[in-house]
Length: 311
Image 1 (cartoon, rainbow, N blue to C red):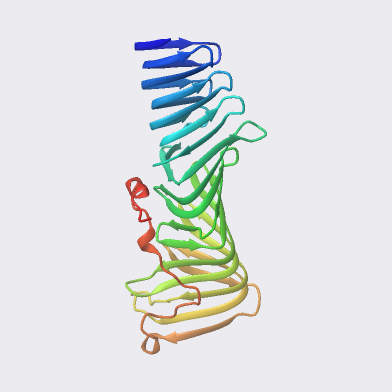
Image 2 (cartoon, helix red, strand yellow):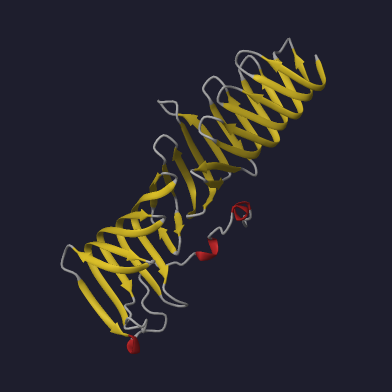
């Protein structure tokens, strides 16, 4: 059976629309072309072409595909998608871009592949793999793989994760962060944790430790707990902003208060070892801790930057 012109097909489970296509009654298979759309209770698939297997309840979208999750209020664009109605799972790839509204802001993410499936409570779990990059007004990041739990608003980043929040660059072997009200709330940095913030043209505040927990308030990093092997480098100044020198401190555990992206107060919980070098005796470029890599060139500056990368 061929369809020519605007066509609507309705059943209890789904609504289908296309402007060209055909249905093979013997194989229970169909191809919908031109403004094709399949809508179920919680999912919408749109694309230039959608192949649909009625028996298996599997839809495959090709070229200019958009998957919309009406329950979790996010959509994903790409050039290939597969959706299985029976278990509510989706797979997308090729020029992938995800968008989700977060209390008036928008979270954008791109990756090579994306898997979406429900957890035990029916909430969506998103897993992305390879060349993962994301952009939100108050944070940007990149990693090799990422998992997002919509039920708890928790994001897990694996394999060379990096996050930028305002002027801060945060890295570790793995990072997971919690969101509250659509904004970054708390961040857990596990193994080789490192925070860098540029002080001026060639000086950098640095916080280093085995593990860290970062706390955010009004989208700004305001406190950091450092656990084991803590090190800090900061540049105290006079009230008139004259540079005093560079302070390097080592302490197993510490809490650092941050104000206006500058280290304001440090609380040490073990015997600290500190050294203040006057500005006249400072090395050119200040002090750089081992493992320091400033990666500002990788930071996406807009949603449009996400799909522009060098392979």
